[in-house]
Length: 188
Image (tube, rainbow, N blue to C red; front, side, top):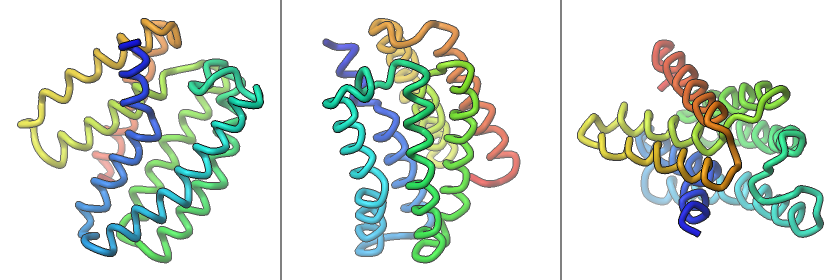
């Protein structure tokens, strides 16, 4: 029960939503513009994909909400990309300050897709590592206790038998590499 709760609280979609929301705030989007942005994000990508995932789970198109089988993830990511590209176009038009960040998220997910073709690394850990890295970069090491969420999430994924230790470590390494490259290129 507790591992499932941890996995739901730190769902990759929720973590990406947190990352993007903080990026929007840091870019200067405030007030009604922030609300508009958040609604755009919610109805443009989160809600459609959530309902698609619920439908796919209920109709047994996928084995479970976590897309535990690697092949299911490949199909799901292929469905995700058109939504993400449409959102990037919308961001370019309505919120251009966030375009670079959304392109970074696209490449984070595209790399995850390429890895998923051969290996099932942890999306929970990738998104948690990336989000925590952003928060520490943007708000300083005074937030260091949030690092403690990483072993908790890793434990939950292992306890639920959704991943092996190698897949969890692979997720951390991948997120750190993408984060480091983005930071070196001053994309974040």
